[in-house]
Length: 231
Image (cartoon, rainbow, N blue to C red; front, top):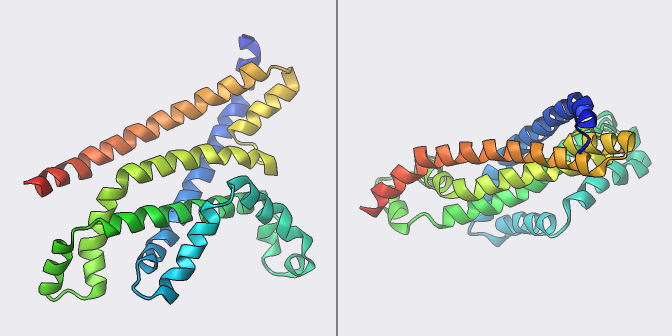
């Protein structure tokens, strides 16, 4: 183990960790923002409404994230109409393309997680809310979505961790994240074991923090709620 090379590369790893966190938070925030209304449409009685959302989640979940990122970053650039459009300043940015690809990917998975949690809400709770005269919007806001959010916490925690690890492909489009810092150290010192072991330790440390946060959230919202429901 060449610890001197690791110590010399720590500033690069620190910057890479910050980039990784920014990509993860931005992608998760945008993905969850769009997943909430789309999950509602995913469970809509009409297949003309639910069908396109199902098709979107099927395609995104059925293709690799790296391919999606390449399609956005490299693929769109081959069209002259895209280069002449007002979107080109954004689509020509590696940051924008990476966040867009990650957000679309996590949005598809979050839709299915939330949709499944909404379907798991007991019919008795929904019928009781309707008997009280709640409209569809009020029913979703006060009964279905809060109960679904509690149920989806464990699954969504896994999605957050998977999204964190998936951002490692950002280095393929020139972004210097943790994996990019490891590749840079390896190209400088020719020490692949030390370089990628350091990256693995950083990913593990961030994952440990996230797991702790979700366990705390489950103890705060899920466990007491399950205790009340089981009575």
